[in-house]
Each structure stands twice: as structure tokens, then as C-alpha cells.
Image (cartoon, rainbow, N blue to C red; front, top):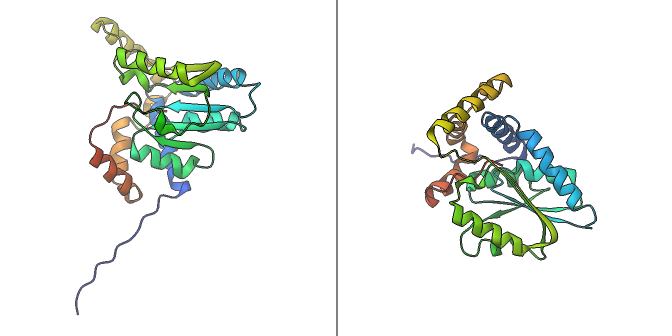
Amino acid sequence: MSGTTTMVAHELTAERAGEWIRRWDLQQERYACDREARFTVIADVVETATAAVGRPLLADLGCGPGSLAARLAGRIPRAEVVGVDTDPLLLALGRAHHGSLVRFADATIGEPGWLSALGLDRPLDAVVSATALHYLPEPALLAVYGQLRESLRPGGVLVNGDHLFQEDPAVARLAAVVGRRHAERHGADAHEDWRGWWAAATRAPELAGPLAERARRGPAPAATTG
């Protein structure tokens, strides 16, 4: 009797993707425990700036699995929201769980032609980002800002809620202590950390496909925390 091999397909369901995104949001709070408040302020600005627009077009840069993008879609249901990222795994999670609210675009921010990959059919009304663009060198970031200025309608807004690196070592050490103690006071330090989340993801059968594509593409900038 000859042996047989059975291949079992592991589907990334909306429910399972939602569980991974919930864990993602918790581990992100270790590094920005005021994250939800930041999201709320960004949404306040965008909602106010697009109040007179019938169908506003919004883009979230470095959207990760779509945490901020989905919140914007929930706050402004008439809006079209485009989440922009280049990580196959995070995009797969976002599409599986938030695909009915957000259109996800696979593009590397700042590379030639990246805006064309978003499939925009009209000027943007608002562009947002949260703790995602700090990886870009200053000249590249300024270039992206310039490109976005040309892509926004008159009166459109760009809201970037990001962290800044501290170049002075002494100031960087102080900032690290302040951030750590802030997380401890809010209990965020008890959450799974970045390395733990990714280690768990590598063991999940339903994520094998996106992880293989991630490995095929090679190292990418760590620009996805949205």
C-alpha cells in the first residue's frame, strides 16, 4: 500500500484576520499608548476638512492592516478610503478583514510612480499617516510631501501623526525612558511586542502564503504601523 500526502488548505478568514489585527493593535500600543487618541484627532481633522465634499477620497500611507483606514471609513461612511502599504502580510490581513470598507493598494511610498499604483480617479481630499513615514530620509519625505501637494484638491489636508527620531543620544535615552514609563502607567507594556507578534505570525498556517511573498520580496522599510 503506497503512502499518500494530503495537502490541507488554511484559509485566511475575515474572523481570523480580525484576531491578528486585534493583536497587532495591542502590540502597537506598547510603542504608542495614545494611539487611539491620535487616530481620533486625525479623524476629527479629516471629517471637518471634508464636511462639504460629497464623496471624499482619502489615502492612508503606511496603513499596515488598515487600523486607521478602517476607523476613517467608519467615521465618514460616504468616503472612499485607500490604504497604501507594501507588506504582503499586512495587506492580506487588511483585505480579509477590512476589504468591504477600504481599498488596499500595494505600493512603496516614494518610489517612482507610486502614486499611479493607487488607481486614483480624482484629486485626493485628505491624506493621513500614523507612525509610518519616519523611515524615509528627509529628502525623500520632502519629495513625497511635494507629490502629495500636487495630488490634493485645493483645501485638502495632509495629517501625519508620526514619531520623530532624537538625534542627540542623551535626548534619545530620555525619550526612551519617558515612553517606557508612559506605557507602564497605561498597562501597555503587558501587551505582546513587535517581535512576538511576528514570531507568532510565522507559525500560523493561514499566513503562509503572504509570508512566502514577503520573503520573496526581501527586506522592506519598516513603514507599516497603521
